[in-house]
Length: 393
Image 1: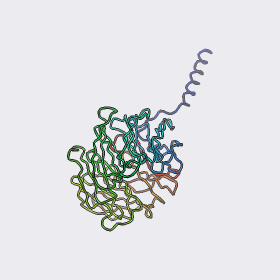
Image 2: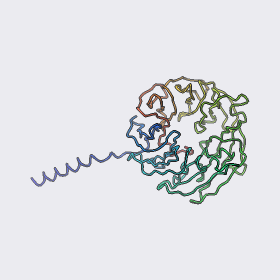
Image 3: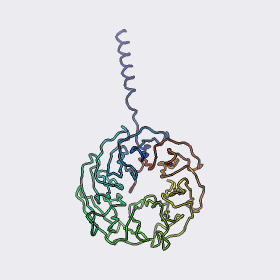
Image 4: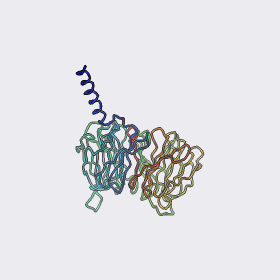
């Protein structure tokens, strides 16, 4: 009996010791908040509205963006200093980190999740890495700038179906498609003379259309990836600042466009307007007057609402638009310097970063009420792991 009691005590002790191991969990409700001033990210739990921890040492995050591995465990953080960091959301540490270039402006993950591409201002081009090890797979230098000893800056890098990356060359007015469908060797297709100074780009949710906004002239350049043999088509000839060159306090992020059903909602450049387009022919159908120069225009997952934030001096506001009637439902004032918004996967929450308020707020989009807030250090971008299953994010 004594021996039996001793065995039971030892067994209980083992169980007690096991309780100290990390709790098993999934990653589908996790995300990261960029803390730009400190070079850190917070890992957050969207189900419980909590911060799980902080990962430091990520470099210059003043224009950081994030993509996720297919299993949603790893976040790849692209820093402005050329840093590429692979962050483990479960261990909450840096799995791997390299400095791959200078003045990086974003990145993408391939359709199969095996490749990470990074676009660079310096040295001007795209570098592609193995997603597991961050081993360099391909170095794609951009076109040299005429009369200068450097290559064009690269912007608007997205992933596309067929194991492709698509990007634009700001200084030389080009769109390139890098096809990695045959493995680690790429085939590059170049489209030249697409327009002056493409500053950013987006890809439609289906992955069919790549559209580059032009800073040097009005209009956009569109590439139909179902029919690339047709070349570049100019669309939205009047999209831009128009004949009256208004000051632009912050360029809209084209990846902040949104397509809801058969409509595209687009931030106007330099104007206090959101433009509404027919997404089948890309012609404008309406104009919505808003509180300031829009930066991000985002739809709720059910596509009933369009949320808009603004450039300075109106960046303390967020406006909510009815996607059917195009009327403003409500103007919210979360606080100073609203930089980004992100909906939870099923749309029951929207998270808003308030940089100068040192917090991230969580709102109920149906009642249009704040339900929680989390302290954060100069928060900017908010990225949830649901993005792992979407093209171009």
